[in-house]
Length: 132
Image (cartoon, rainbow, N blue to C red; front, top):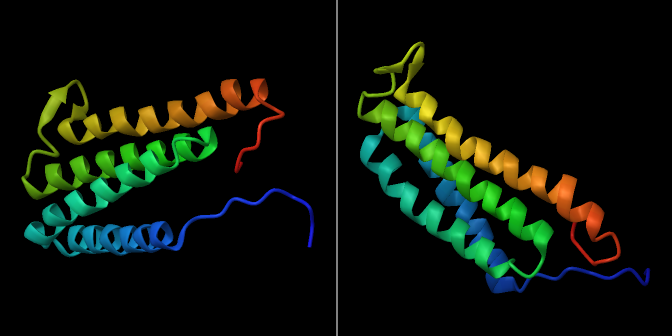
């Protein structure tokens, strides 16, 4: 045993996080198999649980930033899936970009959240307890 601080997650929170993975996998399997109703339906529990997880971890900046990045990743992934399901993914938007490429916006927001944490926040708070 060490005297290191620990980060404990209540069991009910961990169960929700594990269920989140199940919903996420069903969403992506439905996308892969072109099961449109299931794929679209799985967006809601996947995204809602992701938001709840981010909210519950808001007191630890490392957890919050990573969980928000996951939330925008799921949003980008869901938009991309919907664009393919509804057939507007390959429609031209401008130049060589299609509507599918709009998914880069939430993907970029996720990268910016993590960049904020690692480049700005973490170096300024070296002495604070964090999970990363």
